[in-house]
Image 1 (cartoon, rainbow, N blue to C red):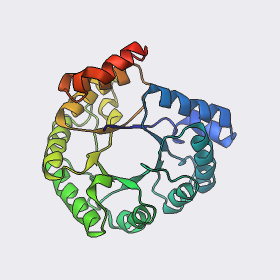
Image 2 (image 1 turned 135 degrees about the horizontal axis):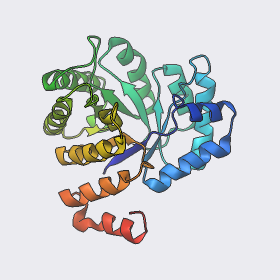
Image 3 (image 1 turned 30 degrees about the horizontal axis):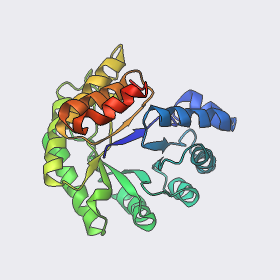
Length: 265
C-alpha cells in the first residue's frame, strides 16, 4: 500500500498561518477535503507558525482536521509537547509522527512518544554531524536508525524513511544517491516504508511542477512507497497512478481505470 501524506496544512505557509490564527475552521476544513478528494491517505499537521503558540495551534488544528476527515494524521513537529497534545486528541490507526533523526536529542525526546502511542514514525537520514552528501552517508544513517528503533522494540513496519531530497539546482547528482538509497533500503529492510518530501528536488527551478512529477515517477520505479506531497498540485496524482500502473504495482491498472472512470484523471 502506498502512503500519500498531504502537506498543505503547514503553518510555515503564510496563508495557512493567517487562517489558523483567525481560527477559520471553514477554510482549514476545505483544505483538508480538497486533499482527501485528490487521493491523500494521511493529512500532515504542522502548527509551527510561532513556537510560542505551537501547542495551542496544534490542538486547534487537530480538532478541526479530525472533524473534516477520517484519515489518520501525521503530527509534524520537533516539539514533543505539541506532538503529544495532538495525539491526545486524535490517535487513529495509521497515525504517524514526523519525525525523528539520528540526532541524540530527537531520538531521546520523540521515540518514547512513538512507543507510548503506538504510532508510525518518519525517520530522516541525518544525524548530529548534519545531512549526508552521498549514498554511503545516507545508508550509514539508515542502518543506525534501524538499529536504534529495533532496539526500542518498535517494528520496522512502523518506520517511514526519508532520505532527504536536495535541490537539483544546487546539488546536482543528489537525486541519484536518493534513488540508490531507496533501492538498497528496500532490500536491507523490506518491512520498512518511505515518506519522501520530494518537492525539494525542484527548488530554484521555474515550472517546478514538471520536475516534481518526473521525480515522483522515478521514485516509484526505485521502490519508494510513500511521499509527502501536495496532492492538489496539477498532474501529481495523474503521475502517481500512471507510474504505478506502468510498473505493474497497480494490478491490471484497476486503480488507474477506476480513477479515469471517476473523472479523477
